[in-house]
Image 1 (tube, rainbow, N blue to C red):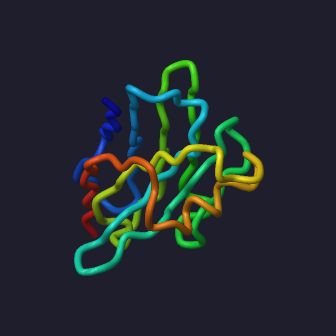
Image 2: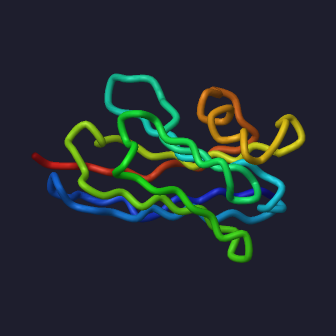
Length: 133
């Protein structure tokens, strides 16, 4: 049984930092494109940052460029999102997504493709990030 579990969400003041983690089990982690999506209250879920299965080709939404850093540790089956200089508009539930590499042309180009998807192979249940201004 595949499990995708996020952690690290919290209440933080504007300008602060958080680190989200996503651990997986039941799948071969290094065969999956991984990403972070978020859903703000009353809005649709959007791709925030995604990364290819080899760790290359990181993609960032314009709203988080220069503030967020995505990384993965294939030995630990874990995806990370380092979030700095948080803003109130970063508030939302953050979801981890895993999508098998077979439908992608290359790891380096996979990030923006995954972040543009609405249907992926596996979703986590989400972790809440609240940024107070």
